[in-house]
Length: 498
Image (tube, rainbow, N blue to C red; front, side, top):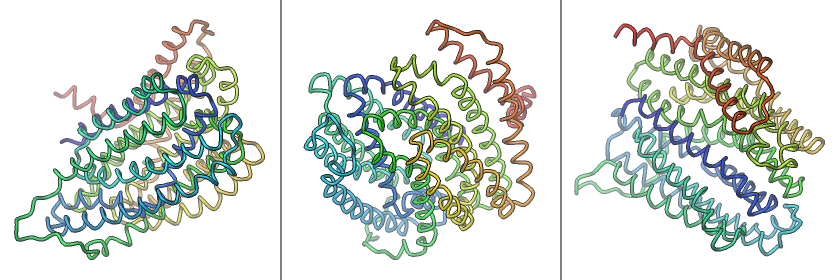
């Protein structure tokens, strides 16, 4: 499977999943109520926090699967590695899910600020969440093998099916059985059971087949050489969770659950910007790791720069479009004045911050391929030491808007101050070219064109024509960024030559 097909398949899947998840949200709020949706937002946050228990094992198995395909591992040792990690995952899922189950009473009574929902209903929802979160987290191991095998077309299709079950099929289920948190979370648990079952059996088909004389005994020995790399990833993953979820955690204990539901919606829509990174990173990380193992340094840097420009083009278009049109789009989407008034400024701040973060993530991919995450670790320690106090203070004092400003400012500082340090370490001479040619020029041109278009376009009252205008606006912004991309011109010259 070519890298291009993997990226296209991943993007198609991610766009569908993001779109379907966002488009259905107003129906959740309409039928469940904003307070009940606050539990859904809390559920999403728990799933991310659960990644703290990963200890770097998911990305490690993905990288080692790619290295196995490059000939670094033999079949027997790789099967032993997988068996050892599978056992570790089961143990951690049991401990983590069990701990969350036991804490459900405390969270329901002392942490969440409920008004209409009963204690018993909230506690039961949290207990069901514990099982769902543990099962969905277990899926990471199997996805790692599938990603490392570059079976991204299959994985993208399967993820789209699961998203349809989670976001769309739940609507007729709630229509028939009741739009309550209990019905919602029991259904999500059933989908999680289906998801992990299919991923488990698919992974089994990708593992190397051994002859009868080879015995796959349980041993921690294959894991030991990977511990340093895995624990480094674990720490950086923990930092990532702290970076992206501290605001949500703090606000879940400060805001009434109804307002937390509104905040969750704004942050979820803004997270659509990060959608562009998922398919790219999923496709290029195993490929770059494989290239590094094969000594193809020029090919690795070429993919790195091409992918950066692609993300910069898309991120700029999304951020600029949402910055100018967030209010009318939210109103059209939700038909809820209270939600729109509360969510618009939070949406804009988080969107721009996430756009910067999407580009800032690329030096991590380079370090991942090289197997050296020391600078990533150091940079994230410094980042988190600044971010967490800023987010806690601003969230407590100014609520969701304060958290949004802290998020934006800290991402700007990291992008300007630390990314050059990483580049100068791993690829001296690349940084100015990467910053100027691959990122800044694209963003500047897109911003200028966006401002000019918005200043000249008339006010539109019709919902239909406003949606058409916004789509056209976004497409023109994307084309303006693409017009100064060396990747686009390279592809155009190749097309003309042929």
